[in-house]
Image 1 (cartoon, rainbow, N blue to C red):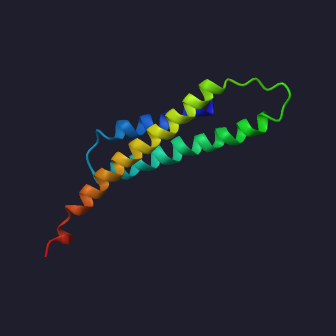
Image 2 (cartoon, helix red, strand yellow):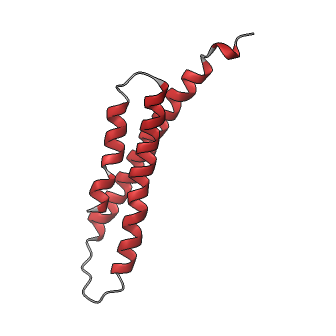
Image 3 (cartoon, rainbow, N blue to C red):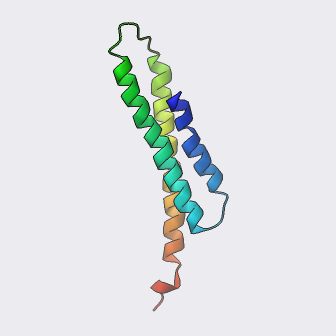
Length: 97
């Protein structure tokens, strides 16, 4: 469940890509990283605890696919937001002499 919720971070970040302004880029970056990767870390912690139980049933291919999907989508969406933020900062009048 945590992995599925982890996909919400990058999806919300993608939605924020359609907003205009540097504040939306900061928010999109934060949502992608904190929600996406944060829930991935939380899932991994819970999953490692569950593996100690004798009744643990694993689905390694699904879990691996979801982990890769959450991590890669969160990183890509955060990178796009970081690029847009860097582009905004580079165009500020402060840099013009």
